[in-house]
Image (cartoon, rainbow over all chains, first blue to last red):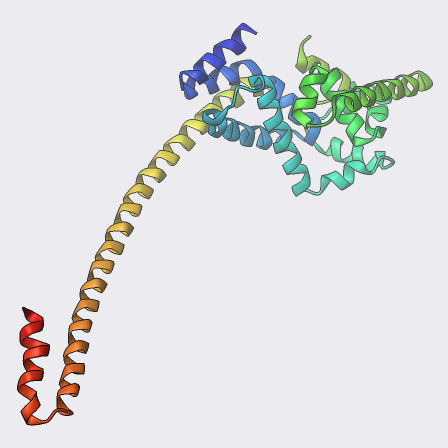
Amino acid sequence: MQQENHIVNQLKNKQYDRAVSAISELYHEMLYWHIRKLVKGHQDANDVLQNTYIRIFRGLNSFGFRSSVKTWCFRIAYNESMRLLQKQQKLEYTRNEGDLTDHLNKLTADPYFDLDTVSYAFHESLIKLPVKQQRIFQMKYFDELTFDEIAEITTWNKNSIKTAFYAAKEKIIIQVKATV
Amino acid sequence: MNQKHVHKEELGYEVPEGYFESSKKDMLHFLNTEEKKISVFFGTKTMLTAAVFGIMAFVFLLNQKQQLTNYEINTFEELTIESLELSDEDFDDWFDEKFVFSEV
């Protein structure tokens, strides 16, 4: 929180170079993982991260201080990821809940994906979720974002996010228990 | 909780060795380069804009001058044609009215 305030002060003083360095120091890894879970492949995640940095840098002078810097950066990363997915028409692909084999083929084609270390049941149950539930669950569980932050990032309704998260959690628990 | 560990253990996502340190440096370096490009671009853009405005002002002034000259020529031609319809007796009065007094 102190570091976030420090960035806000830098922005108020128009020290954009310093602000972007501080953002990078604080959120670089978090932003990467947030993007990686949305676009799946490492190379795509790296490209999206670079575009995210460009947008953050260009947008710093118009930052409105209405949300936290963290939420703002995550929202940019989310939008950039969506833009890439739309470009690659992956949205249609990820909506195809039943096609687990295709999905895993795509993942295993990435040299930076190691299926052996994964809890297969967990992965399978995650992939089988509807895309909205999948994203919400990942943001809450892995990125440790609050429901308010997820609502700001995705512009979805906070209550529907809560409902989707608990529904996803329930489905994953049932699925994992069934396979154990 | 170590994010790298969690993502590897639970989702199987890996990253190249030393990725985060190197990518952080690369991104910031890339932004510095982009910033320089933008400032050069805007510097060039300002000069181009000034040049375009200069040319436009020159063309406008040239056009204004041409229009004034055309007006004078047209007026003179009209008067010359008008003078052809006059009789010799009326010409002196007409000439005084149109040329001598109009100048005054």
